[in-house]
Length: 479
Image (cartoon, rainbow, N blue to C red; front, top):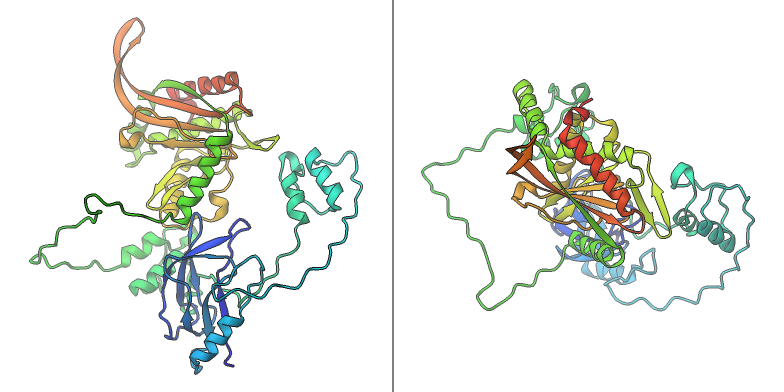
């Protein structure tokens, strides 16, 4: 048989169980070079580029574009670029392929039932020191399963070992197989020594831009996306040829279009359904004047030509309020409340595939300008599917702003395991009483959704009172 290898659905992150083959970038039977882009694979939140780690060819593409496949499942067959491969060889390889994980079902056919596994030896109970920093549930599980906690680094407050830490340590090591490893380095050999971001190198290759001698605008002269796009020659358009009107397809009258949920949409549906059905929400609403922030923005615009958004100031205000009210800066894990020392604020970003919440980490230690730069960078990565898991998983608080759409007020669903989320509406001019006189002010409606299991009404109200004071006196935000 020819030297065939498996190209299986890769795994990124411990929570990934399946992926979607968004697009094959090479055709069946066409040779490719090391570093060539082979496929785009979508997970719950991001799109990953899979590149070739060596020269080769796909004698058969098994996965269909848009199809969902389990981690480890065979999605293509690999061979050398110059090998003569017969259809019979490929058929035999596909029929004989077995995923490394027995839970993964191969679409090539049902595998024969595996032999019965030998009975697992009974867990040896272990004794844990009374002063060990471990939760009661984690202690009971570790003692019952015989898990040695000496090598476990706790993820709880002050390094406390949680139930999840012990449960993860008790799992057997995952066998890696079903094909060769995939090189994810997004750059070919020709640009290996160029000081540029992976995306900048990819764009340079796609547009034929020579990066030799180019000094980037990034830190220490690093070449970024904007530097490459500035060197791309504009495409000339024939003005004599009128562009055709854009036609929007829609179902015929009386019919309905059935659209399959994307992985991101399924993840959103699962998380928010769980949140709304299991978390006791309550809502605290307040009207806040933002004229002082508008004045600061105008000054910044006049001085530098650009200014942070209203949302950037609100994120900064939330971060400082969380520092003063740590009982709101929490996550809820079963019967445990995790209280955090820094304000890691998730900012809701709408993308064409769904909502994602990248995290501004340590927002209480950042200036408004730094928060503005971080939010812009994260939003760009979110919209292009370039976020890494640690950039959107976790967080201790969320901010969702629909004011740019003209929404006066709304209530947001809590983003578990976080304990609260702030919904921000549009700023509207309203008549109010100021100093026994009628005046007009720009008012924003805020709504705080709280998890009543961890946050009491008085605690949430005190947080909102502090937040309102910070927003209406924004000099405190830039100090």
